Image (cartoon, rainbow, N blue to C red; front, side):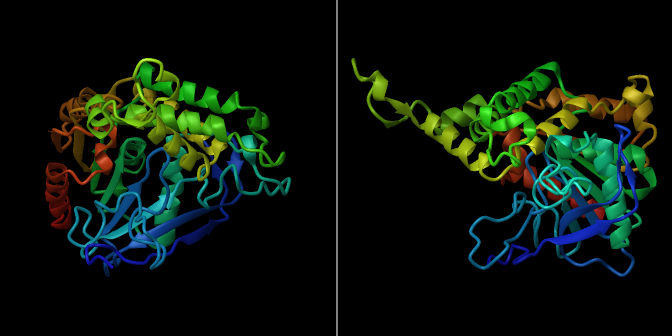
Length: 378
């Protein structure tokens, strides 16, 4: 096993019986959250870090589930001994959010009132609902205050919401490739993805599990649409160019020609449709669409951030057009105007939005340097 890995890890479950009132007004009488932990909680419980996942993420952020496992957790590049989130020093908690499809209570779990999967009847969620449930997980683990709450993309939105809802319960907020609210273009991409799923005959109005069908094609198309927006034009050009997988573009041969990028996207779509739930995808993209950090503060982000008491790190990537550096600078400008401590960097990277998942040296260096400050409690 790689010495820089957290090694073999196992998911854990937390059962909550205290009712949770959601932003939509509905109540979950009880629910479960699946989570993993890496590193050791110190005697003062002061070294805990919460990792919030993005749209298609889950609890398995680092390490391996068995000795035969060849694919580590989704953020293994950043979590582990000697890595930016150094498990020699931090106790890291990563969970599958409420409404997820990897073990936490959500559309694929049973509705206690019917004995059938919740499906499309699962309550709609907002980012604040995830934060409230995460706060209960912190209570369950005996963590009064996080050393840091960290997230990329949709995870960054959760981290910011933490800073406003529970200002005394985190010392640092790390926001990577995120925004205070989605642009109209981003909302449009999410709607196209949802329409692809919902127009698949296998969707069955969202009751596909009861009908023993799956909207596999629709979910694959949704993933393909999302995937191309997470990459930059340069990243796609470097990875694929106009290389052919098969066939020829010689005169008369176009019908049989297939580009490498076509094959790649179909593979990504197929893999995703076999591992992710369609209703969860719809639920989470809507939560993403509805997120607006400053809505309840008269659309004034400065007023919103005056609620915060923590320090911030904000990172963006030069070729990320889904969550562009301009959106991160909006966060930074509001934090400065609100007189909140903030460190900001825009990182030159060719990988687009997916850069926050990649082992980009400058990114890891900056992230690691800030987390060193978190360790020193500065």
